[in-house]
Image 1: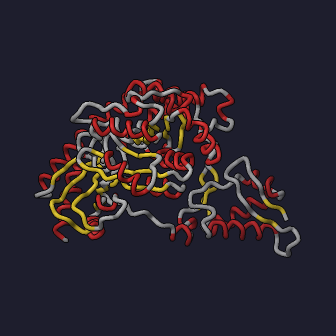
Image 2 (image 1 turned 30 degrees about the vertical axis):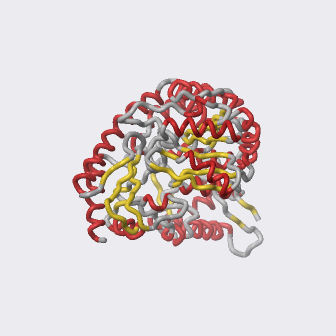
Length: 469
């Protein structure tokens, strides 16, 4: 029995020919091709191997392959394009498996708070960075990556953070990770079952990652001045010693408030007095509109604060690139966990990002995005005033989302369903609490990935959905 293993002209194709069978080789080849097309293993429009290449791979005559292709051309399974080759026909490539494949339903007006403007990803700048990387990267760049991250990117991140966020950043204390999700995974593993106080409300997926890795989570309430740091002593007395506190001080996720300066100082004092750790998630601090930028807390206490950042809000979540700036005592533990997790992030993308930052394209993109998001934030505020009487918008001085207080408590699930029927995606604030509040008056609405007319229409439809309730 011969099994085809590859071809130099067209895609690789797995076919079985049994030379001991009574059925001829040509008939076996035709049956194999038909079955592959019907099942969807050969998709519509896929180019087949050249007859000479497939004949060589299968160890048969070229005439046999030409005749088999000819039969399937006549039956409509294949089509020939002069000068281009032989392809799977359009209708023939539709299989039951392909037809049953789920098609995600995305609302036309989706106020998902986790996206930047995906349509304005700097494709040309990224393409130039990739080309420069592939042209200039040394051969060693194509080996297994450094689990800490490419040195070129760590240097670029350190310079950028020092200049823009006031972070005390040394390339030797930076670990590149696959976004904030892996950052939390690595920290939870390094803290080895430690007790972590987390802002409440907060981001449920991040809490889930921490808990899944053994962290014991304690809710730290949030008010109009940010996390209530003074509650830490009472929480420790009730729950046990707290090892770390997770905060989003520049723009609390999701309420949008900034951690008040006295509470910043109190949190750093707590870390010093209790040998605790502060985890500073600086997820969207690049975007501010009505206030001066707030420097990162890490710059005041680099030995007590883990600084976390990503490009998910500045470029795109799909890049899966982020970083941890660590106290020196944590570096080895986090690097060991990173090595075990995935041996390191993809090097080529890291080098491209380093090129983007070092060449100034990253800063230019941020300045343009800041202007665009300010206009969209203003459009959201105006649309809420126009279509949601009695509602108010908060948390809009910075970031990519806002809190809309409806003025009355509603059932979050029913509202999501009513809005969904009008092709609007909304996200109830009540589901961000550790003790979920199914009935609440708040919505978390992201505006970065919707143009101004779409924001207007989406809020208008949301108003109609509220009337439905």
